[in-house]
Length: 189
Image (cartoon, rainbow, N blue to C red; front, side, top):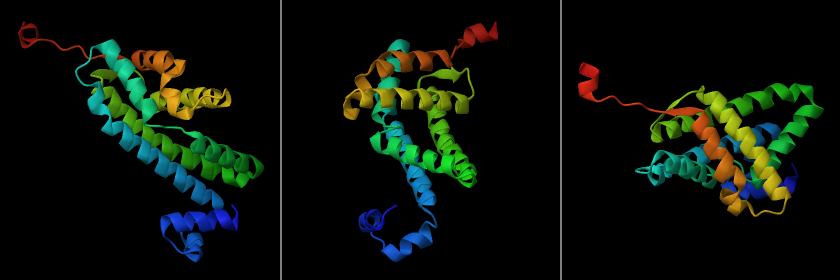
């Protein structure tokens, strides 16, 4: 990271540039902290959209959940850039690979928790472990988002992509099953 970039970050965060290295000993530690913060912000945005999927039929809920997930921005252009930079650093320095994997696992954990909550909001049971579902969603989402952006798509319109409108609802439907509720009369019989 350049001195100017650090100065800009410090100005936006309201900290003194000399304090930066006390908080983040390395550039990678800073990038990891940014990624974690982005994951937490995404989780909060997704949680705030749960009301948008209430009261819909099953197919509509899956569709609305996919759009809500896309609008929560689990990946954006900045996150793709940070992840690419961080992974490149890890490839160049094997000592950094362990820290990268730990950071990505923390991010996955944060997003897995909100994916489990989303599945609950869909009134569905998880057929797959939440971490596996989150990993598949995140990895397919990231590749599709990159293809959208590289193909000159506007990242603000990604929620209209075929990935969000067709693939993601299918994934959500396949990794879950509707909760079967039995009536009290049937359960007593």
